[in-house]
Image (cartoon, rainbow, N blue to C red; front, side, top):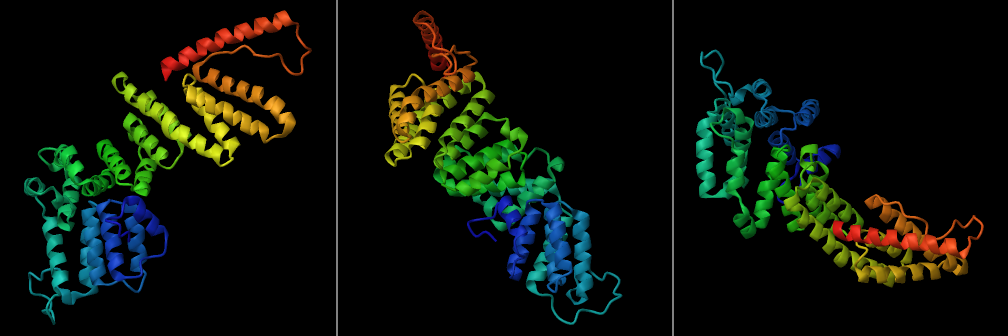
Length: 402
């Protein structure tokens, strides 16, 4: 099992695809987390595999009963409980109210007795009473939700959501707000991380978890929550902002710019400037630095490709334009005499074409087709003047949209 605090649902599914846990403790832990996350189909597969293994016995069947109960499958939990009793009647898991069976030979082990008692209590659970007591404990100390018993009770409340007098989610959102997040970011990450895997459809939890993972340098957790987000979550502009910042962390500048573009497409007008500013800062900060580093390492082709994209998005900013000219010169110098003669105009033409497409402009050609006969000077001048006017208009429109 993942020992870095707690396993996410993605961690758990990856472990299921690997070899089965070697130790009994790890098998029990795997069962428990499958139940907590409500992964019913995966739990069914694991239980079927355990039943046909030499490890199957009454205590393990009792652990399976607990997992089914946490997953909200009360009938399956009852069947596993009865199976545990049948596997070892000496444990006296099912009370002999009529006195029909011999008394057990020995005392029931303490851990088995405690688990059986807990399962009986859960089977006759009063959700409203549990809700009141859980909220009281959590308000006294919000980290109660991170304890084993506190988390299990929270899962039971989530499973009994329709039976509660008021939904638990608004209470949870207020329980760990910005002040507590700033004071204990890693504990807050665990809190929201657990909630997003317990409630995959809760947009607020998913965004909080992914954002905190990014803050705490937990790149894999952040990537997992971004990749497994539902279509509803992907329709939120803050999702794309988090995805953009995650891409920026690993140096994927163009991907980050694309994600901020998606955030702008989803954002209401009052939010648009936030994402526009972040995209601008990425171009002029990390984007410029990465392009310069590529040039310094002699990777002129990669630098040129990156700078063409940056300048297409930010044509008015002179430092990017100057570095693009430097990259074009370096790339041309590396391609031999013919490349030097032809590389600059062709690259510039390709850049302009991409820029025009992005704002829906049709640019007239700056020069005649290389296959066409040489045009007269008057026609060439007219083409260049038309090109200059349209390019000026394009730059202005880019500036307004940046």
